[in-house]
Image 1 (tube, rainbow, N blue to C red):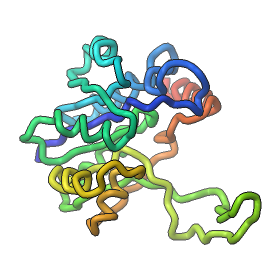
Image 2: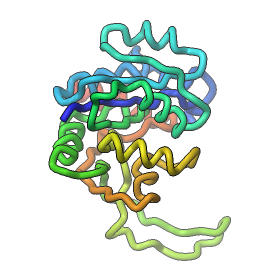
Image 3: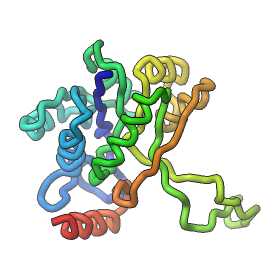
Image 4: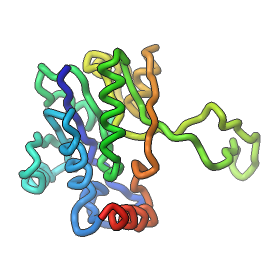
Length: 221
């Protein structure tokens, strides 16, 4: 079964502070997006790859990724619209689809392999996850309402994987909702399974995350 990948890279990344869109912020001299695309390209399972670029930056991103055989489309103002734009550009013969965040730019290749293996094993949708380390509180303003048991809670990562028809149906049903793609599948009653994620597949969201990513790259080298 053929595998394609979509990379959502249109977000502004306001929590990283002022500057370029998040996917274009530099990590060790290269944009986060380049690291993310390179990681997918190193996975032998991945064929066609489509990137949803920041609005107005299709030409720049196309030039930036010229060495990686990707299709670049213009993203949108929400993640779900960006994913849908990229999905629409994926060749019709692709049966399995990975949806990845450019901000999870250091996701190790074994995570990609595990997601694809689960799909080829019959799963409709697959999410790499990690157990939670922190105690979780439910609050109302500044008031703590409850401590949430975390034994059955997991933190979701990407790439998330889907049978193409399942992902298309989930987007058609969900419309422009603010959740991840697996959440859309859950909402329509689909089955979502998990595979082990990895600590290095963290999302670059705050300035401190960039420092951590630089440390991970140094350790890899």
